[in-house]
Length: 414
Ligand code: ASP
Image 1: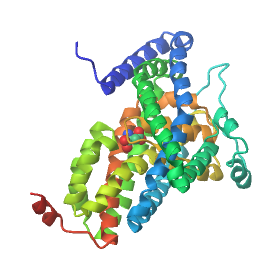
Image 2: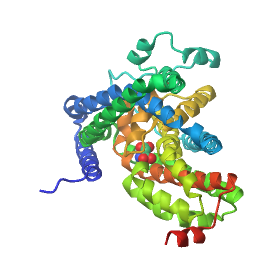
Image 3: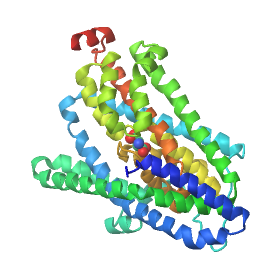
């Protein structure tokens, strides 16, 4: 029998989970799901928690090492990174604005917590304490307590150190690259178990929270998609217009093939060849796009940043936690860094969401509430991620005075 693809398995698990949950809810058997199904979901969440520290550490160091080549490309490198960072920070703000509007209109639920359930509360600390707290005094304790901001700082230091050490740091660099390749495989394996996590947790969530939770999931999806669309129109098409004189219609038409491929494949990395084709058709310089697009598919994830902001506010609301303005700023910083650390593969953003939640002191187990529909978030966020890379390639080409005509490029290749 032909093996079903992972998205299909997840979809089936989602439908089954909702069906079993509803039956248990209406027959008053919620306790059954809590005793016999949720533990399997817990195992899945434990695996996510276990993988998040090595993934963040290694992917961030790996990302910094790959930026080391920037010296070779000089101005293009810095302009690209500046574009990526600015647009990602704007994406976080857009995500937070939409999430707060939805939250303010009480469209996000506050869940009734099952007895004996322990939900961590987000801790509020003042800015200076937070600042001091992100610098680790003991590396091992940062790892063992999964203090994500400290793990990021450690990664930044090690990545910088490896680059600074040059030839002498080569062994370390190879070790990081090799470990990262291994951890990616482990991550793929854990993600392949997600249908089990989706089924058991969805059944439990619906059985304990009732059918209304399904409506809430539709709303949080709507919120994220509003953020994605706003960012694509306001930031990407506008920057292509302002910096490259390209009309939004032409931009979206030219990027359409890559956007659709990303939407269906949910992988920026897999979309790379199509993005390159689209960017070059839209007049980006081929040398510039050869640098910008691979780097973008590794570190530029504005869709992921919006998703992480929206999901964090949504899950905080579910746990009954109201976040302060200072904590929102922390979300912008962590989601920006988390999106940089997200690999351009299917479902990676959800693992990094665990990092944002941990950094905010929100219970990672809550992820299971939205995990069942993660694929639907992922389709939109990957589509946006890829659009951002193309827009960046076009803008940087023009800043470098290399932006050309789409037609000329196409005919040269032909
Ligand atoms: N799937 C996304 C991408 O490849 C990453 C994510 O899961 O957010 O761009």
